[in-house]
Image (cartoon, rainbow, N blue to C red; front, side, top):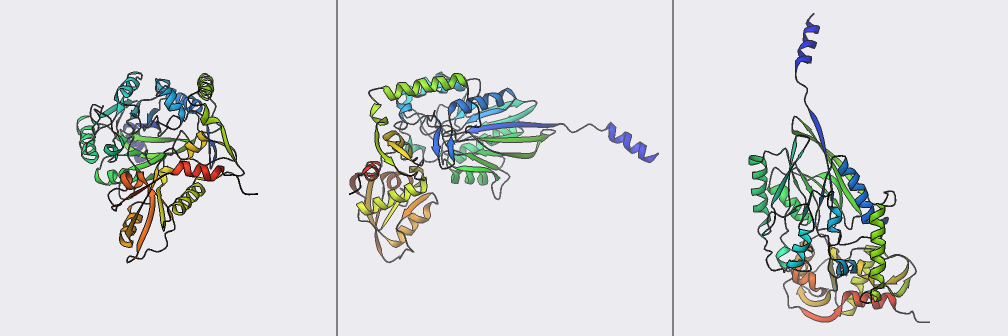
Length: 433
């Protein structure tokens, strides 16, 4: 009798409602509309990504972009077509973060691009930008915001775009989302590097999920140590898409699951977009202004991985400048080079930026501070550092004057040598008979 009464009581209790919300995110597309060669095989292709994300959207998913959707200078697609793809995401994207390259063609061009889309472009610490957005999915409220990283003031020189403190902005936004908007989860969609994302999670409680960007990092879903914040990053160029499922019981987040979806040949294309991309690429390659980029300049007998390319380049920099040590940011090397015909567009894809080699002399103690500054550095010729010795160091103007400027304090001498051009000479030189 007692068991029957207990059963009746349990049946009378309200069931705890469970709801799962799917979030998808890509970042640092940089106008790579075509599939590209990677160390893992062919990746990317906007026609594949659009087909996949459109179907997920139809199933109720929220879809986000971490920004950096264009890139002046490389690939050439961006110089010819600008933000032509932005409207292709209408009806698919729910929001996009402001990336440091999205205003590469100036404020007027950026505003024209922004006017072409129906999804909001977010940045909580950028002037004249939407700070946040709240989405209601089957009764679950998801608060979303984006940040401009601390390097934006140095990287983005565009009239009318000003960048404030990211941590202060995040604290204000998370408080608003939690206390005023009464959201059930808080999500940050970009655009700052991995180190800043981790610092953000530890400094600002209440962020459930950070979608990584800017560092071009491939990182599967994991919880950031010492926090309740989850982190995932989809690499670059639509090579992967982050897919995360948030499960709620009675509007309380109880489970976070997900991973990286490879954008490869297994994903079918949107045929209409694929035809459009093919036509635009053919027009680009036949345009007199860009035609030379697609003319063969050499042939590689074997593929060169990103790491091998970086080593070859840094060894070359050290040799050309008679340096003891050569350094470069990892972000200066973006893609491997495939076996076969080499053209300038492929080389520009591997090294998108035409950095200059500079040299300076510094004591060992300072060199050690430079080496310790970040783990996102390629190094050539650095044995255990002798603090009492003076070293001749070769690096790029970007590392010395932008990325590591706070620790790279020495008298810098320009060499007039451009990294990519010197690498081109080395790769295309005819071997002696």
